[in-house]
Length: 385
Length: 162
Image (cartoon, rainbow over all chains, first blue to last red; front, side, top):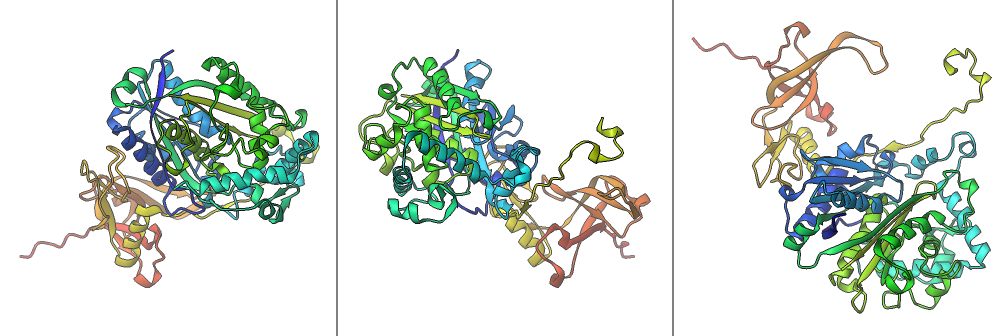
């Protein structure tokens, strides 16, 4: 397989309500990514678009809708959608476009505009539940996470205080991100005292609904060496789907993340992830999910992620920086764009271009992960310099 | 099997809906377009600062070369029927009386145009190549929508002065 590099990245500000259309947001991110790589649309052979349910933007065939703003005019173009896991799957798709030898340069663009959906995007989520066994109850997406969080906390004896530390850390990290929606200096008490949405989930345990876009430029080795002094290489990719019957899984552990991670580690030749991964951007739409996913990624033992957090290991200046970007909790959560934002963050961190967010030392290898659908899809990408 | 049922209760069914509504922003370029229509009774186009392609409706960026476009500028709401249809049924399948002519109108001097209704013309007289102009609602009735254009109508060429 051909080696594949990331040579450019860009993103819009993440905001609650953007005036820009989804197409305009896509163009802003895509243009920034191309400019950062010193490339133009003429250099792009194919385009990959990632965007979550059409029901968020309120536009059917969103891939076609977003195509012109994503640079796909008269080019091969595909849109993928694997729920919340889309933002990390899109660069995986970009990777196999190039690794296959079919294309040399691919522009990967992810967009979500959730503010179009009224009264709240939760209304669009209801139809992801089974129409016969669950929808008659009027389920809200928050409930199912509350069920998972409770199971996770109870199995391991983890407290809400320990979990709240993740929200405090990520929202603080986001203060240093110029595109962040919710950077804030908070205390554990602030999180615990915020409104209960579905116990044990309080408002500050959750990422916001957001509008935004992110993009990366990926290319084959011979192009990367020509256009970039500091290419960041795709060392491993993995994706995995667990049963769609969430009632047939034990929610305390994300096995689909583990299998996706194992696939990526094997490709990257990683035997001891905790020692060989230097920076992590796990998917954190809820604070407990960061912990849950660190365990699924085999970066600590099951139930051990809360300890790492309490000990400061996951701080930006800790031994294993986790969500130095500020994550979804702090930067915001325009679903697909949020996942790709994590890949952009690795790109900037590994090149030493993350500004005030730069982790100390010289991280050589980073991992980004996203998860989606009814908690059953895991996607993982490992980048290294 | 379902098609043969006369009583849907013979198999258990659930009624369902997706309970969402949408509020769409017109966007940066779309805002300029709708303001030109509402405030000035004009159409607006934006030209690519790189290749010069003139977009109507205006766009923020050029899809061909990815450069930014210039500020949208007003253009005459006139053009040519590039293709048309005569609709006899509405969205619900009801008879339209009289039938409605929908045309794609290429706006003069631009690479774009818009789909709209034709009016003040007999459907039998519409043809590809027909020159048309927009008829705007009175200013007080405009809301900032493409429906502020009542319809397009044939341009009436004045007879040459003798």
